[in-house]
Amino acid sequence: MFLLNGNRLPEGTAFKDAEGNHYPQNWLNLSTEEEKNAIGITWVADPAPVDTRFYWDTNLPKALEDKLETKEDGSPLYKQVYDKATESMVDTTEQVVTKGLKTQYVAQVKDTAGKLLNTTDWYVIRKAERNVEVPSEVALKRTQVVAEANRLETDIQASTTVEQLIEVFNNQNWKK
Image 1 (cartoon, rainbow, N blue to C red):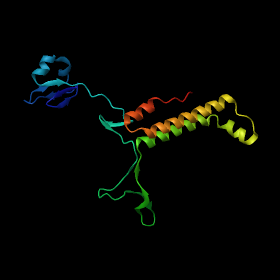
Image 2: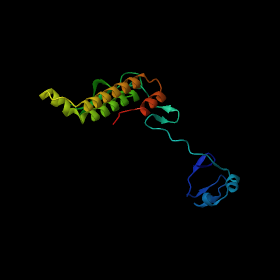
Image 3: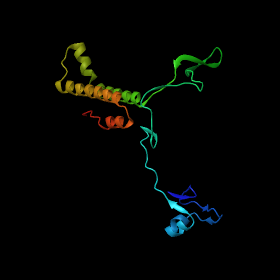
Image 4: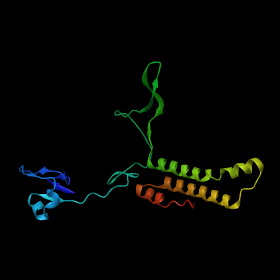
């Protein structure tokens, strides 16, 4: 991106420099590097994008652990519900919790495992209701799904850094 006096200059937009000189919208595209340097325009590479699943911003990872929320005075922040009788919001006894990455990804693993197992649940129901054997390849697939879910949950909970969590996330093996 182009910068002039620390401010971003969008290409295709007219601008003026510190002395008040006006430049047309196509000037950045048509001028040479020397002409840009002469008025103080510099080029800075755009920052690398961050993975917003794990980071708020560069070097600012999201929290791994759940956080009990508090008010500014440090007292617990409770969930509120609408009370029709008083026509107002009232506190409940349940404290507001911001879910950390571990909780979010364990829930995702459970959801994925549930969806993968769902396709063969009828075999298990048939076995329970009518004692018809589950085919061995189906039983193996189900065992693999459960094992992978258990492994991932254990590894997620053992993660102490976002980088470790990313490694776990990138090494899922659901054997479809």
